[in-house]
Amino acid sequence: MIFRAYYNRLIVFIIVFLFINLPIQSSANTAMFRVTEVHDGDTVSIRTSSFWGLFVKTEKVRLIGIDAPELNQEPWGKRAKRHLKKLISENDWIVRVEYDIMQRDRYDRILAYLWGKNNTLINEQMLLDGYAVLYTVPPNVRYVDKFTKAQKIAQQQKRGIWGKQGLSMTPEEWRRKHNR
Image (cartoon, rainbow, N blue to C red; front, side, top):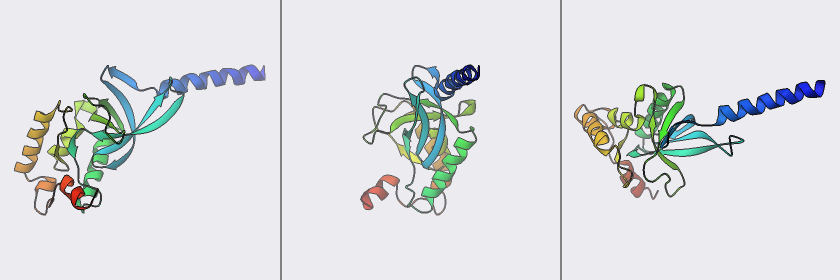
């Protein structure tokens, strides 16, 4: 009798575990995931699962189309990270991940567009708010026109890195100068 009660609880636990850790499929090219960490202004980690949810792991996701200042690129690196964290937290740490043509970079990070509640494209919002620069790497160019417009608006309105005491060099230039 006691064994049966424990056995039933174990079965319920396994079923719940499987459903909690599986990504919610939105379409063939997107899925919902929980963000577990914001690394910088253009990289986060999401919780994924494999083999029917039995193994939970986290994977790094590089936001397509943007390049945020490096963390050591003071003060904008830390500001960009804080801003991305704010955008993610406004979405209860749940995002829809959309893939483009190339799904991984040379560092084996997932390449994706992150969508929040109310269909907000977080990559675009980082540009619009002035915390990242446009960074296009073909073939992942699905939203390049949208991103170009967002950056132009941020520049015209002198938001974030485009304002007074803004960014003195692009993240790409900074990495080259600092051998990164």
